[in-house]
Length: 378
Image (cartoon, rainbow, N blue to C red; front, side, top):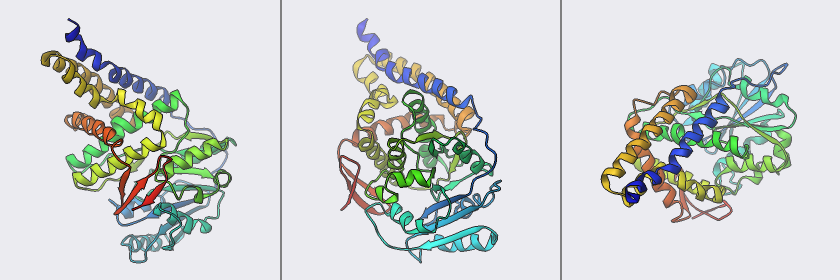
């Protein structure tokens, strides 16, 4: 009898955590409102760019089509004049001549994080006290800036970060990666927010006060770290500022890539999280669906293991579908539901492999990550 129950005990932690994320998601998304404010605030947006992304022009143009009354400065940060994105940026500047758009080309390296080096090079151009760093593959709705800047009506707020999703996929490979946002990233973030409070930022779009950045030593304080987004949010939090998670999603535009490239990126993210939050990362293993699958098969009779896993995925698919359809509204499920067990097994595999080494590949460069999250190029 006890042997028959073991597979059901194995799925218990992941099942409870899955239901917990659903409750935390409901708590966060039930209130879609943002703080009221009197007027829009002038903002400088820095976009580090390297190479072409999926729909680069439309990604950039979405920031020029904001329903936003205050001055908006858009600064593109590029390291090389022959970068293919330069032509797209120049076309954008021609198509929106009345917008404050500039292109900064500077190859100066300030540290192993080349993205932050790009930002440091362009930062002197930023004129406004409200700043944003936003990835080049991000596309936004016309009300995006209204939503994120509204939080700064509270003087204690130093940084606002935006959740992201991928609603447009190109077959199973990109759907496989997009499911990570729906089934892992967003549920984990809203759960951390509810249980711990927000002490980190998500790198897709981060809006912050100039004073908060100065309090941590500027962008130079981030240039030695792999997880510059986590460090920006965490250091601003430790400097005494409040962090907020906005309700409006930004769209991460995924381009078709090989499974090997996606796996390499997933492993980089896993090792980034391990060095950024080592205790939390280790403890998260017990809630991983992939671990529940493997454990159920290893410790119980096959028939009971299969029954336990079917029960678990009844819960898992219900919770993830609610996130997909109601909260993220990416509509990945139920169409790509068959990928979810594979997604869970990969997540478990990368969680394990994150402990097996400290090397990561990032945009063609190989780095060694130290225990404090700093980078050393190999």
